Each structure stands twice: as structure tokens, then as C-alpha cells.
Image (cartoon, rainbow, N blue to C red; front, side):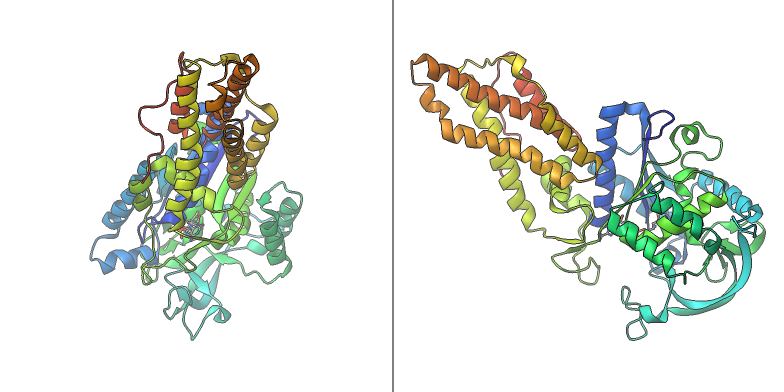
Length: 494
Ligand code: ME8
């Protein structure tokens, strides 16, 4: 949390608009969304800011636009709208959607470039310098590749030969910043989470062969981008433009949002862009004399049924496909519960219906139906409402998991409450207790059903960050004067 005023600023990467949104983009965005919802509940709506958006410049995007014969701006407008729509369908609660072709972003990036041109490194050198660059450039990756990255002389990710590019570019003197960045990462002043990724980054720094990075390209190789203010033959190259979005969105350097929310608390990304966020981004910020983000949280890359998502294989899953089948909240549940944040893993789409039936229809849904039906039938819909209280030790552990971005574990704890209740019902058989005139049995009946309703209360309370509407529906049912079985199941069978 920002010490100044207990605010939380959460960001996702801005996604390239060369192609449609897919479930990989959705994963990071859902993580950001549920964190933002959790912190809004904790700190109040005004104290949380959640940013996502699209990255719209560069050769790759210009090429994609050219392929379909559309002007790049029109092309980016279309795809950017698709991202926006996908996030609306998923009920993503972002406070802003930044686009790097917006006038505001371009103006602030131009100011940032001018500032970098004037800035000095910690060793007193100019931050930017001009130099000759020659390299193998993959348009698909939007980066230069090392010869050792190639397979059969081709980029293994894009199956195409990189172009040999030789030109004068402006470079950022990254190496002068590395000792300071290393110190901040080592001391967790810049927390890299999880620690395996922290070690990976420290390893990169220790290898000591990190080249400085170029911040511009000639307009011939990258015509679609922000002008370099002091050299009209050069365009700003992707990373200064893209990374700056996290501060241009806040109207750096004077804006109220910037004053209130910078430094960012949680910047989410996957390991594909680890180096750019853990080294380039801190270096740019240090050069601008700014505070670094508190935490970079890096998740793994997932495959679909064991394969990398790719148009050629035809296994790209659009988030809308999942939402159409399950609705926004259940889609978020299915995606988050399958995948542990830090690790690389595989998404099995055929597991979605199995998980939906097991966890939501037969697990939570069945508990709601049977418990409310029994309270309605055996207790005339009445339970002692004073029992509806938070189970502090359980809920606080769930909250700790959420704050550690360990949603899978948080959900396991929530589902334990559900299993515990279903187990108790099976064991104590309230339908038999209800037939008995014995006073002890009547008390037991009340206590068993009271226990289940209390657990449901805690489940609903804890699930609010992920399924706010379902959670409110459950609370409305169990907090009503008379509890009744819901007319329609909350989680209908498929
Ligand atoms: O890299 N598994 O954009 P991008 C998990 N514009 N996450 C995935 C994923 C997968 N298979 N595929 C994508 C860029 N992601 C730049 C970023 S930021 C200043 C600029 C998610 O469209 C994950 O968050 O390639 C990853 O880091 C991001 O999308 C890359 O999106």
C-alpha cells in the first residue's frame, strides 16, 4: 500500500493490437480485476485505481494493418475496441483504458523523451546516446533476437526469418543503472514476486552482458510510432512508448491521479516481458528521478491442452467464448481456479464443464439449495441471525491468500467451508432429526442448519472479490426475514 494515503494502484500490461484478445490476456486482466475489487472493499472505491489498455504502435501492428489493407489507426481502433468489449463482457472493473495512440499519451511520451535526453545516469553520463545498431529483428516479437535464439535461422515463436537491420539509433545507457536496480531488487524495495522470478532477474544482472537498449528506430524500419522530438527521422521504439503508459494514464507529472496513486503497488505481467519490466522500466523511472513501483508480480505462461496458443494450430480461445457459455463471474472462477499464479501450466478447456459441475453446481449450488430448502421446510425459514458472523481466523487466512495473489489457495479454503457443510448434512441427516420430537434432536437440527448457513455467509462474504453478484444473491437469500429455497438455481446445470 502507498504509505502516504493507503491507496492501491494496479496495472496490467497493455496488450498488442496486432491480434484479437485471448484467454492469456484475459487471465492477467482477471487477476487485476479481482485484486482491484478486493482492495476497493478494503480501502474504499476512491482509493483504488486499476489500469489496463492497448499497445498500438510498432512495426508488427503496421504490418498487420497492411495485411488487411486498412490504415493503422483504423486498424488499432477496431482491435482496441475488441479488447474493450471483451473486458466489458467479462465485467472487468478497470478505472481507465489507456491507448498509446491517444493524444494525451503521445504528448506525455514526447515530454518524457525530452526529459530522458537531458537526464544523466548515476555515473554522470548522458542517459541517451546515439550509436550504430545491427541486428536480427523479428517483427513478430517486436525485438532483436540473438543468433542463439534462432531455430533453422528462423524465430521459433513466429516461424519466420528475422530481418538484418543496420541503422543509427538512440540508446539508453542501461548498464549505469543496473547496480542501483540490483540493490533495490535485493532489498525488496522493488519486490519481484514470486521469488523465483526475483532470482532470475538478479541472475540476468549478474551475467553482466546485458546490452544497453535502443529507444528509437528509423522511420524506414518503424514508420508507425511516436516521433523522436529531436530527430524527425526516428520514431520512438516500442518500450519507452509502451512502459510509459503506466504514468501517462495518471497524467504524469502534474495530474491529481499521479499525485495520488504513483508509485504503483502491483504491476502484473507474465514472464515474456519480465526483462522489460524489471530492468528497463526501473531504469527509465530512475532516469526521470521517479519512485519505482512497489511490486512487479509475474505469472507463468500457459498453454492450451499442452500447446502454445497459436492461430496456426487454431487453439486460440477468445474470452467471449467462455463468457457466452458460463457468464462473466463463473468464467473468472473457472480461469482463476485452474491456474496458479506463479507457475507455468496448461489450461484444459474440456475441464471447464467438469469443474463447473463439481464446484459450482454440485458443490456450492447444491449446498445453497438443500440448506435453504431444509430451513424453509423444517424451521419455517427461520434461523438465529446472530449466528451470521465472520469466522475471523478462516476469513483472515483467505484474505492473506488473496493479497499474496494466491487465488487458487483462497478458493480451496472457501471450498473447504462448502465441503465441511455438505459433509455435516450427510452425517447428521437433518431430514431424520426433523421427524424426531426429542428436544435434543430439535436443537441439533437448528445447530446443523445454523452452521451451514453461517458457512454460506462466510463463503458469500469471501467470494465477493471474484463473484460480487452471486455473492450478493447468496447474502440476500440467507439474510432475508424468512429463508426460502431460491426459485431458480444460482448455478444451473449446463
Ligand atoms: O507484450 N499465458 O503485449 P502482448 C499467460 N504490448 N499470459 C499471457 C499469455 C499466455 N499464454 N499470452 C499473453 C506485450 N499473456 C506488450 C506489453 S506493457 C508496457 C507492453 C498476457 O499482447 C501476459 O500478461 O504480447 C503477457 O505478459 C501479456 O499478455 C503480453 O501481451
